[in-house]
Image 1 (cartoon, rainbow, N blue to C red):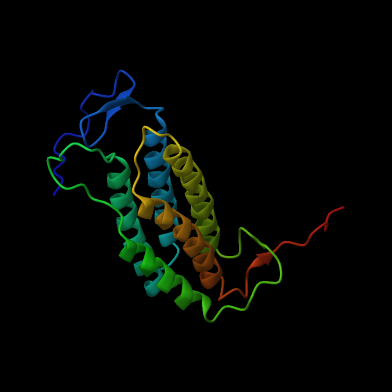
Image 2 (cartoon, rainbow, N blue to C red):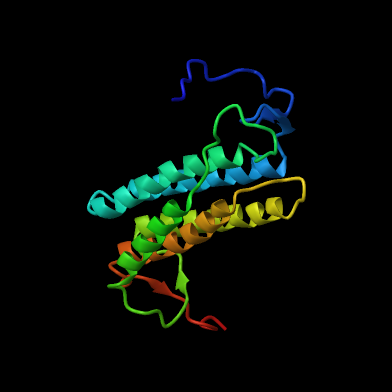
Length: 192
């Protein structure tokens, strides 16, 4: 368990931060940027949850996702290496991705098929979920860039999780928009 007795350490005052394996990297390092954007996704989901008092099932799903996102941050903060680890690293696993897929299918089952793209909006919860989705997509793009670096190791389920999560957030936004009834639809060329 994590114990945070002292919040400031001054260790980052020089512009570097420490990964879980002890490496010190610049705060603008791509790995740091990636898990920082995962954290930003988590914060946006927290905002959406403020508007879900009347929907405890969706709120519970998002609570599980917020916990998963801390797992993902820990995964990304612990680069895989050939060296024997001091302790087993926390990694995203296939079961977490599978759960997202089941939840997507469950929410989507009673939503009418789309006939147009959806604009972010409708209810406050949906708007916040769309914001979280776009932040999640940025995290996914950063993770792909990180994975393309030969010196960086990332567990494959991490990418699958982010890819599925953005879909989950899209479907959840439609779900809380009255199962799509209050979606704001794109009208191509409407303002020409």
